[in-house]
Length: 451
Image (cartoon, rainbow, N blue to C red; front, top):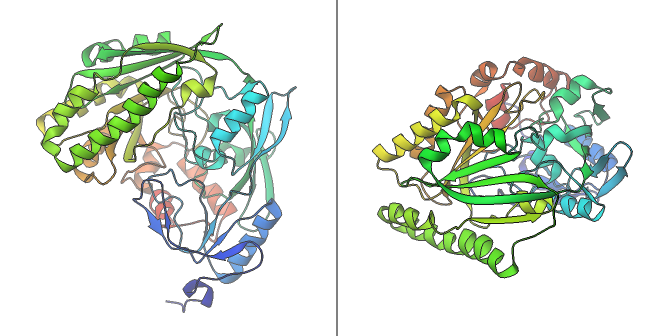
């Protein structure tokens, strides 16, 4: 074993962009790391300098946004790059209908800024706290019949490679990098800017409605076909689901009332749900009874608003999550197996199970790469023992050819992914070319990509 350098054994301060580090924790609190130093570059040039300095010191490098991944994909014992100075819109091209944005920009700021310009992304997930680079690099998605993940809306991106080069990638410029780097896992370089396709802002009508488990599963294909965006939640220990259908509307806008919206989105979905989860964690036998009450708390409602106000919602109750992408035709069978497993086991599950869909896309390591996809996500309240539940669910998902979300809890490794992704070797060969010395490696990437 080589002798560690001084940089590897002591936190440091250097230049204008390096500071002594402290322990880093992700949003859920299940991942921690202690980098040697933190860097907050304000430009691609400063980032390139930080990478060269890390190379001189023999340190690995990872970038972290808001820490919303449940895996250790952003953890490092080397240099931690904070992108919070790389924010804002660089340019809007109304002829091409694209917007180029700095990589550290939170989605919530992008959504608000686009709305002011009369523009919107076509689709998005239900949380908008993440940075644009963090969300796309891990494959964050919403639900959609024809519209895919946030990464699938990328038209170009800029990244700094391990040797400090600034590379621009698109379908016509460095297309082989573009094919992989839209969901790059932080393994190919540090993304500094992203160009998204946008469209004129539009209205969505959301229809939320309780529905029985048997009905929603038997009508799943029809509900998916009839709606632009369909998703539902099943409450374990019950036969109750809550469905949400989002479709474009000619208007007029009719947002939720301030009082009724606060009751649904804050009081019930966050405040009381937080209290219910806390009670359930302290007294697990109460969870099935709590679930029966919780599953009936949200009533049917319909409202119309601009996209980000319909797609996204506040998530203040902290949790751990596992999510698997399955061939869409396997989703109902897999979900029924999960329900049967919970019913015959001693498990007590306080969080609903979420089901969403996505069309096939052309990104090498997208969970929807080359196949129509349904997502099944399971959650547990922060601090609740999760291994038994997640292990049982994972065995069901892998039996159906599932691909785990890159930023959510799973136990799969490179040998599994080599079979799950037809273009896995394409990605790892590109990684060998762009980062032969594994400057961007960490334990998680060694497991999922090999070394």
